[in-house]
Image 1 (cartoon, rainbow, N blue to C red):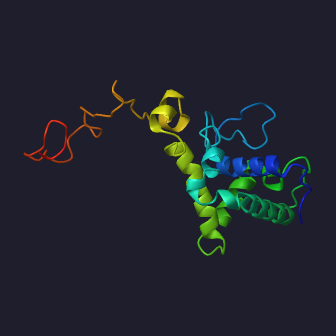
Image 2 (tube, rainbow, N blue to C red; image 1 turned 90 degrees about the vertical axis):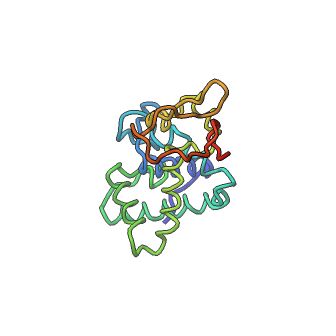
Image 3 (cartoon, one colour; image 1 turned 45 degrees about the vertical axis):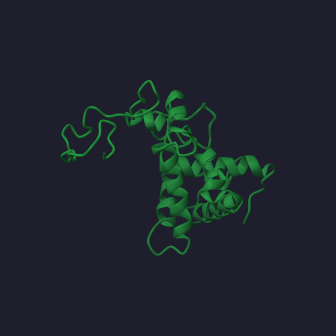
Length: 189
C-alpha cells in the first residue's frame, strides 16, 4: 500500500479537504478541483475553512494531521481494492474516490464498532464546526468576510457597537418571563 506522494503537504491538504467536503459538501472551487467533489451547490466545509480549523493548535489534532491523512488514504486504497475501483496516481487515494465511495467509506469509519471511530468522528466534528461556527475565526471577522456557514444559517450581524442584542425573539416568542430584577443591560441587578 501507499501511492507515491511527491509533495506530502499538498497531498495531506487534498486528503483532509476531501474528507471535510464529504462531511459538508460544497461546489468545486474550479473545474479542476479534485478535493471538493462538487456534490452540493454553494460553499461547504472547505470554503468555510475546514483545513485552517484543523491546523489550529487549539483543536489538539494539528500535530496528527499527517497521520490522519495517511490512515485515510490507506482506508481509501483498501476500499478501492474491495470495490475494484481503478487507482488514480495523480491524486491521493481518498481524493481519487468518487463522492459516493468517499461517503460510504466515511460512514464505515464513523460507524459504531469501528476500532478507529473516535478518530474519524473527531475529524468530522471539526469539519462540521468549520462550517457551522467558523470556530477558527472571530465571529465578527467571519461575518465581515461572508463566512458561508454563518451566512447560510442567517447568523445576525452585531449592532453598530459590535455587540449582539436580540430585540426580537429568535423563536418568535419569549421562552421564559424576564426576571423582575433584570437590569436594562440584561444582567440581574
